[in-house]
Amino acid sequence: MTAAIQINQVEKSYKALKALGGVSLTIEQGEFFGLLGPNGAGKTTLISTIAGLIRPDAGNIAIHGHDVVTDFRNARKNLGVVPQELVFDPFFTVRETLRLQSGYFGLKNNDKWIDEVMENLDLTGKADVNMRALSGGMKRRVLVAQALVHKPPVIVLDEPTAGVDVELRQGLWKFISRLNREGHTVVLTTHYLEEAQAMCNRVAMLRGGKVVALDTMKSLIRRISGSQLIVHIASGAVPDDLKHLVSDASADGNKVSLRVNEYSEVEQILARLRESGVVIDEMQLQQADLEDIFLQIMDGGSV
Image 1: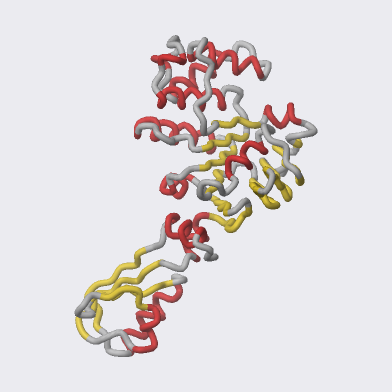
Image 2: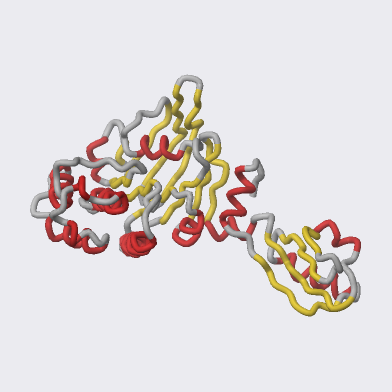
């Protein structure tokens, strides 16, 4: 099966700044893929290159097998991008804006789908309102609608919920999740890491224009160094050979947190505690989350 997005050794520089330093990624059809990184990591440059707005200095990108430079028309037909910036034409209503966007792709009589998109994004009541009169959150909804108006098989969302209310977030994710279940590939960049953890199946993290982590969400979280086994001790003390795992302890030593790298280590730790005469009242495994992973990797660590 042809990849939804194939990125091969893409480089882009702006004078002395290396925005992308040889990025390679394969995003399969039907994935919900997260592209994460701090400000300046190269995410927006990469998205702009995928969308054909920027030409790479080296490497190539294909959308469903169509090169974004040499076969840009077909590549663009297969792609819908929700930009981070609020860009709109102040002379049209919402419906006129979406009809105009349909025309860019040669779509006639597209009102049925336009109505469905507006309904799912709670824009129906604003269909005949001029774009200038909309709030920032409503304008962002229209940007999402514009990206979806030609039913692209690949959808790229660049900070889609930045500065919008909870209602829009819930409605947007419900609609996007439905499109993903129907086979659309979704690529998400966001600073709301809890959203990425909830939605994405696989994640790539960028730092300094390079991919520094690439794995499934489940595998990343399982492998992260930072999960904690918290034990409440009724009697006894942590033996010396386990003290290097202790990350925190109460003043009386009755509550101890031990670092866990793999789930398989939990039973080994518990067995060693029992052997040394420790009686445990209560315990819990506090799992690392995407924020823990992100901070560790951006601090120069690895997983």
